[in-house]
Image (cartoon, rainbow, N blue to C red; front, top):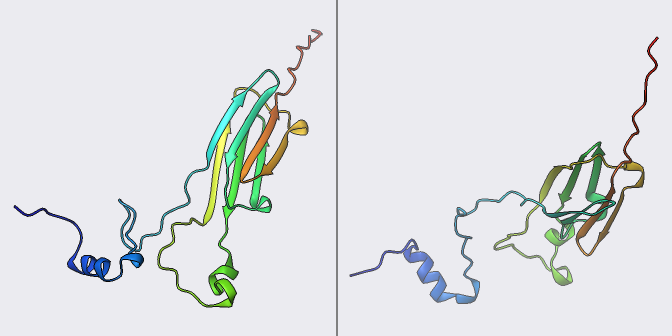
Length: 150
């Protein structure tokens, strides 16, 4: 009994002919299909003072990151840019041809609704080694004000 495979005869021949250069598509991805930028991996922590948000943004420059705070909603936006110089010339200025690229380029945005409002004036952002760390203190609770009835 023969086993059925999804590989074509040409793929088998090419793999046998040049085994070091055979590049197969990722399972579930069609040949030549480009993938969208993956979601930002995050972790949100809460302590007595407020919240800490950690976001993995490898390959992003800090100039390409935007953080906005609107009451209790925090929004991250990052842009993964392709290095044009690397596209034009390879190592030593030699031209090259990309055989397969799984690197992702484009913009991604994530929003988080926190249980309390954030004190925007005291919020801090630090970007180091591809990890964005946001320190988001809670806004001080407003004391109730009694109105005089006239």
